[in-house]
Length: 125
Image (cartoon, rainbow, N blue to C red; front, side, top):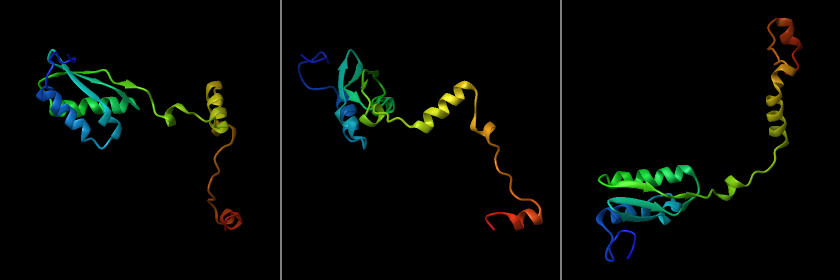
């Protein structure tokens, strides 16, 4: 016996939800499992992000409005989200912000030339 409480065929709502996910352009959503239990659709499986978890729920909600949706999808993260390479410039800038320093306070922005003499002497001229 499956989670739907019946040993037979999936319910209409379960079939519609599974078909909508299978037709998604987001491939990871095609592996989401849908089961019905006591008038609730339960989404299970693994996705790469919280966005995909929410997207799966909204896809199902669009095709099955009369059942409560229980989203039990597990967010495992993609390899590019869990692998963080150190970036020295970003880390030093973050440390400076924590200490109350900013780069703009250390070096003022260059002002454009305003007079004819400054324009003639400008290095880009």
